[in-house]
Every structure is written in C-alpha cells, then in structure tokens.
Amino acid sequence: MSRPISIAVHGGAGTILPELLTPALEKEYKHHLQLAIDTGHQLLSSGESALVAAAAAVSVLEDCELFNAGKGSVFTAEGQHEMDAAIMCGKTLEAGSVAAVTGIKNPIQLAHRVLTHSEHVMLIGKGAEQFAKEHGLKFENPEYFFNQYRYDQWQQLKGTKKFQLDHSEAIRDRKHGTVGAVCLDLQGNLAAATSTGGMTNKQYGRVGDSALIGVGNYANNKTCAVSCTGSGEFFIRSVVAYDISALMEHTGMSLEKAAEKVIHQRMLQEGDGGVIAVDRFGNIAMPFNSAGMYRAAKKNNEPTFVAIYK
Amino acid sequence: MSRPISIAVHGGAGTILPELLTPALEKEYKHHLQLAIDTGHQLLSSGESALVAAAAAVSVLEDCELFNAGKGSVFTAEGQHEMDAAIMCGKTLEAGSVAAVTGIKNPIQLAHRVLTHSEHVMLIGKGAEQFAKEHGLKFENPEYFFNQYRYDQWQQLKGTKKFQLDHSEAIRDRKHGTVGAVCLDLQGNLAAATSTGGMTNKQYGRVGDSALIGVGNYANNKTCAVSCTGSGEFFIRSVVAYDISALMEHTGMSLEKAAEKVIHQRMLQEGDGGVIAVDRFGNIAMPFNSAGMYRAAKKNNEPTFVAIYK
Image 1: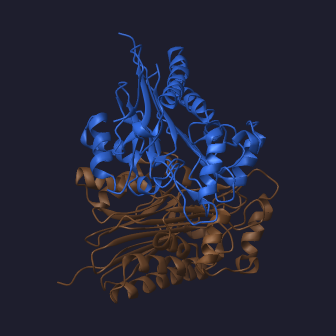
Image 2: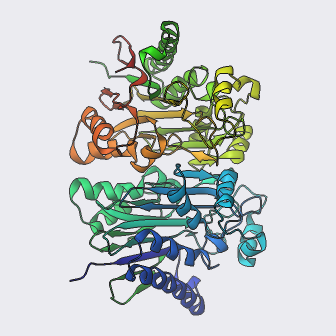
Image 3: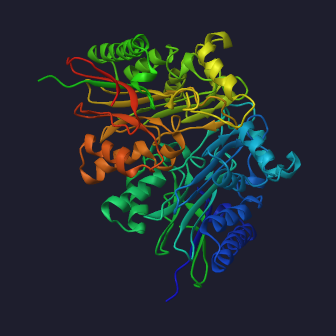
C-alpha cells in the first residue's frame, strides 16, 4: 500500500445557519473550499511537502474575498486591514508567525518566509512588513482589500467600542473569520497553516489565537497538525492546538477523540469555534461546537468531503 | 497547619559565570532578587492574591536597571525600547499580554490591566499604548530607560544584522534578559507573570516567548504556574510553559520532575534557559540548562533562597 496523504481546510466557524446563506452563496463557499483542497492535494500527490501544500491551500482562501483573511479581511477601527498568520512544520518544529501586518497579499506566505528565512519565529507590525519587503513578498494597495460588504459591516460599528470577529449576531450572524489548512505529505511529515483578517472594528492592536504557535496553530510529527478557528481569547487561554497534541502524546488518545475532547470538554465553556486536525496516519478530525464551520477534507484519492453546517 | 504560600522570581538566564560578575555586582543582583521576593511575600502573607503579588514582584525587577525589563530594557535597532509582558491567573485562566510597547514604566502592570479590563488577551504596539493611556498606566520618557551600559551594547551592534538577547558572548556573556514571578496565595490560587525588554539591536518587530500565553508564561490551579527565560524562539517551538502543565496533568508527574524533564529532555536541544514554577502545594522548581539563572524563592516563612550560578 502506498503512503497516505491527507489535507483538511477550514474557512471559519460560528453561527452559520442555512437560513443565513442563499443557495448561490453556499455553492460559492463550497467551490472555494474545494479549490483549496484541490490545490493542496495536487501538491501533496506530486510529492511536495506538507508545509508548502498547507501554505498554498491557505493562499487560495486568502485570495477569495468570501473569507476573512487576505483579500477578504475585515476593517479595523481605523479602517485598515490588520492580518495575522502562522505556519509550523511537524518534522522540524520550525515555525513562522506574523501579526498586525497590512498590505501583504498573502500573510501565510510571509509566515512561511519567516519560518524559512528568519532566526525569529514571530514578527509583528511595521517590522514584519519591512521583512516582507526585503524578501520580495507581494504587496497590494488598499483597493485590493476593499469590499463593500466588509465596509458596511464596519460602518455599523465605527465610532463605537463594539467589535466583532466577523459578522456579529446583531448584524447577521456570528462567525469567526479565519482560514486554515493541515496536511500530511508522502514523506510522512505534518504541517499546519492558519491566517486571519481579525475582527471588524478591532482596536488596541488586538492579536487573536491565529498567530500564536501552540494556540491557534501547531504541528508535530509525533502527534498531529492542528489549525483553529473561533473566539480567539478563549482558544488562547485553553492553549487549544497544543492541548490536542499533548493529550495524544501523553494518554495515547486517538486524534479524533483528543480533538473532540478538547473542543467539547476541555476548552473554556465560553469558547466557540472548532479545529481541523490530521495525524501521521492521515486520519482527519474536524470537531466544532458552533452552528457551522466551513470545512473540507480529502484523504488519498477518496472523494472530497465539503460541508458547512453540523 | 496553615495554608502554604510560595513565591519564586527570576531575573534571566544564560552564560552567567562568577568570573563575569564582580562581588559588588553579584551582591546588587541578589539584593534586588531579595527585594522582589520580600515585596511579593509580604502581599501573599497579608492575604493578597497570587496575581497581585506576582505583578508586584515583577514590577520591582522592572524598576531595577540591572535586569532587561522595564527600566533596564535593551535598545532595539532603532534605538528604542520595545517591551513585552504577560500575566495569567491559575484560578480563572484569565490572561493579559502586551508586546512591543514603548514608554510604559511597568509593562507587567499593563498586562495585568489587560487581564482585568479588556475583552482581549493580547494587545500590541501603538494599540496597547493607547489602551494604557486610557487606563492611566504610568509612562516614562526615553531618559528614564536610558542606561549607558545598554547603550554601549547597542553601539557595538548598531547598523549590523546582529542582535542579542541581552549580552552576547561576543561582548561579555550570553544572557537571556527576562524577569518573572510565580506565586501561590493563601486561597490556593496560582499566578505567573513575565516581562522582558527584548534583544539588543532587535529588528522586524520580533516577539519572543515572554508575551505568549502557554509558551513563556502559564498558570492553572490544576497543575502549576510557570515563568520562562531563555532563547525565546526555541521556547515557542516547544510550548514550554504549557508542556510542564500538560505533563503534570496527564501523567501525574510532580512539578519538579515535569519541569526538569521539559528543560533537560523535551525542549529543543538548541534551547537555552530555564523556568521558575510553583504548584498548588507550594512546591517550587527552578531548573535551567544554562550556566546561570538569577533566581530566588521563599516558601511560607522559610529563609529566602537566592542564587545565580549552578
């Protein structure tokens, strides 16, 4: 039997209900999730590393304005787009992360560059942008990131102290805008990649879980690769991604059981969201405790699983 | 028997050797470690929370220019002082963290304010400074943070791509400048607090482990409170603080064994530094794999332990 390959992606979780999405929009979301899977799977099939495949799959979602990451990033209180991203290699435990970066087309590619070309793990703000310039990362002007729907969301909150992770209940639904990918490659290596456009009307340079290694993103060949999406503060306080890995390592629990246990029992009760995770056998788990999570997965040459609701 | 109280503090780890410190300087370091212990212990004895005591002990070290945190922070590549701090409550798992803040007299007090007064866990840069202004935190001008010794360190690296965690071997020794405190209070609650002035000549908005919950700082009444000091990138990739907690929780290992195992066996080999940790019984562990670590501890009314070398 040939070695397994696996990929799973997510495009955020939250109060995503059938009555809130038109059939046309649902189809569009699924189309882009499929595109991300296809991109990553093709790379994995051709022998490319989990790290490169995960970054490529996340880039596809960053380039789609439906998701709150890259092009589709929400507006901060100052009307800007501040993005976070992180990536980790399960073989070497090398990691790269950026927070509060503006104007970068694909923050996940910048995080990847930090992993490969920096002595540091985490770079933020103007410093991270400087590093991006020196390494030839692609920048886009504010028009590229402009989106009428996101702008209207911001206008409803602008000038108030309110913020929201993506859409709030008050406006339409409650959704945690993040995208992510986890992969197992032909060499048996795992990788996880996560990217987000933050919260609408966010202030104070808030950083959520997505940029934090061990919290919103983690990979270790011994156990699993995990990418989170949810109410970042609760995910941070519960150290969610590493918690799944530690449970597997110390108790011998399966990926599926460990991921379920962390999301449904161990995470702080107020925490809302989910994870995608893959282990070294190619098993995939995608538990969430919210109404929905944009998600898709493909193992070997099995058909792609794509879903939005529970 | 009355309930136990415990406190441990550190002032950084690294290549700290007797031949590199004069007896007078050694005495001064020990004096300030003792002062930090006394401040925290007095608060704990009077029934104050572990959270308040840990923040107070760290503030004492931030106010001393010997340590790379607060007043004694090193110079960045731009000749500024960018500081990080984090604090966590073991009872509620509430946490507060700030990174890349400039001009704040006591970053740990700002992190504490984030914990108590913000819906967020982590704030960075100008946004965190804005939050500090709105909450009346004390600011100091650049002269307050000026220190000839730190300035001379910077002059030797300025204009180069080199950076160092505090003093590098090239200049004098290799020391990871961070301060921290862990406490157990009379109510049986744990807390951890960590603060750093970063690396001399650091660029690109680098953030180390100190500001990261679960990585450089973690507290959970179920297990322990931990504050790390060391080569931040390796501590991040090994999720050091939460790794100690998870080992204790899942394998029933004692605090001492778990802390030793993580520092000497589980952490990435290139990792250099140590931790201070306390459990809910008041046991204290302070393992490190570098030549020295500025450290002190006091349990109940036992004499204070103060040490620098192995």
